[in-house]
Length: 169
Length: 90
Image 1: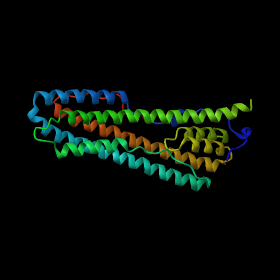
Image 2: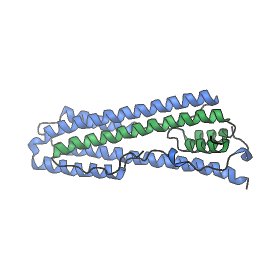
Image 3: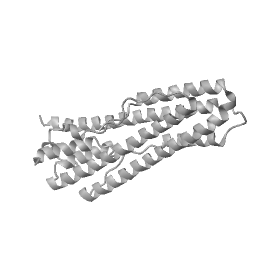
Image 4: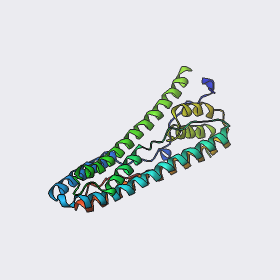
């Protein structure tokens, strides 16, 4: 339900102490993923006999990574549910949340499982190993996209809000 | 003690910065805020403070997950991978 423009407050500046947490430097995470991919390729090309073992160990590491991402995703869904329930209690109205994306964890866990299961003997697992870090890179990119989406949503809401306020001038 | 206008401005900022609410819900809530009294605004401030804190914790968890993966892979390739120079800031 919209309120008349004259009832809307004008000031929208947000005090610094309530700014959102600064996200990790995602470009640096992606750099790390690229470097790790390159090193893994180098190592498995130089010592192909080690590829299956490297694949298994990297798969286990990636599996833990995926499980942690999964925990974080579930946490975000829980926060969303709790926030919406409390908002409903406080205002008597229904609000909607942005959809939480599960792609990253599913990708990480899927690749991890394949690596842990192992491929054909001596598995030219170089490609699989490389994909481990490509997954991490995708995760980093998705975080970046998510941050951009949040910023766009915030700016959009702010502009709409200001637009109505400005109509009064 | 914050004035009503200051409190309203603060909560508006928190709604805008919410990582949960959809665009339409942010818009809806922003319009409704102007009708809320101080008690309700304070309750909303507490709610969004909690949301922010939980998201900061989850972001830290994700960053830690990456750092652990990086550390394990560094061991595998016998070379230290680049370390992010920035973490989640307070």
